[in-house]
Each structure stands twice: as C-alpha cells, then as structure tokens.
Length: 115
Length: 115
Image 1 (cartoon, helix red, strand yellow):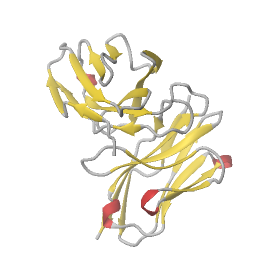
Image 2: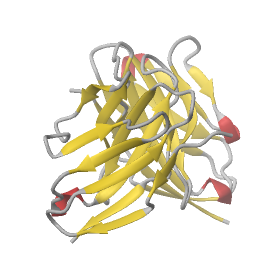
Image 3: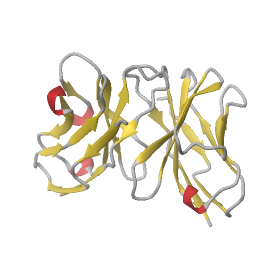
C-alpha cells in the first residue's frame, strides 16, 4: 500500500534560518509528488509539485523540493525562512495511473518561525 | 481566484444522527474529492467522484457514507448515522482532471463534532 512519511512533527526555527523538511514515500510505481501548506486558519494550498523532468522543482514563496528517486524522497527546502512561513506542511503523493487521483498524505510537519 | 467553498464551517451533531456536509467545487472542475483529518492524525482520502459516479473510495467510506452531486454546483457528503469516531475535519477538493499531476484545490473544511 502507498504511504508517506514525514520525519519531523514539529520544527522550530528562527527567522533567516534554512529549512529542510523530510518526506519519504512508499510505492512501487510511478508517482506524482506534492507539497501543500496550511497557514493558520486557512485551507490547504499547493506549494509545489513534481511529475516529471527536472527533479529540482521550485514553488511559491521561495520554496523548492528535490525528488530523489533512489531514496523515494521529496524533501522541501527554503534557504531563509520568514515568520510568515509559520504553518503546517504536508507532503502528498498520488499514483501516476490512478484514475481517481487520490492523494496520500504524510502526517504533516508544523513549522514555527520565531521572529 | 476561484475557490472551493464548504458549509457549514462547524457542525455539532448527536451520535446516530444524519449529517450532510456541503461543498461547492470550482466551476470548471470535473473531479471531486472528500478527505478527512481526525485531530492529530493524517489527512485521509475518503472518496473521489467523476461523471456522476464514485471513481474510487477508501476502506473508511463504508455504507454509512454517500456522496452526491445534486445539481450543477454542489457536492455533498452524507453520513447516515454518525459515530463518535466520525468527529474530524472534512475537506472537499476538486481538480480539473483526476489523472496525473493536476492540483487538487481544497476547501476550508467542515469541523464535525459528534457528541
């Protein structure tokens, strides 16, 4: 069965620190990969996605993620976080051939950025 | 920018009662989804819906659950006889297509509390 694992439950950083959130998935076939963010009181929004091509993808607000197929990983990075990045971050996958398109989510990582 | 909307934002019901959660997907989208998140747990897929029928459902989506698109705009999730363990945040999502790397747009969620 497909599964997604996020290594960190809660990360606390100071502004300007670098961020890396880990995500590993388990699936035997080809997948599409996503990072969603949920700011306090708001709905899930897409940060970035990968489906083919350059394994380094850039998203909104200075975030990027790198797909490493051999490690089944899709880690999220940002060189310098801001207080406004405080949110919960979810890694998700869906199977390339899945007609229903269901997303399998990781458990989420809560990021707190101290000003 | 078009948004997925959900009503109500919070629903409190007694065990055994029926509830209907409502969603208005983005107007040109064709795939519709329900997910739920029990407090402290992962976001879990419930069901996907396309062309007026269920395209995929999870083990959670048993006979107590049903979905419907009663008109051209609404997409509903009905729980026939609620249980305490149905207490969760329920998210509706929609996408242009269910195959491949198409973004799913999420609504703000309905918090269901079963007492």
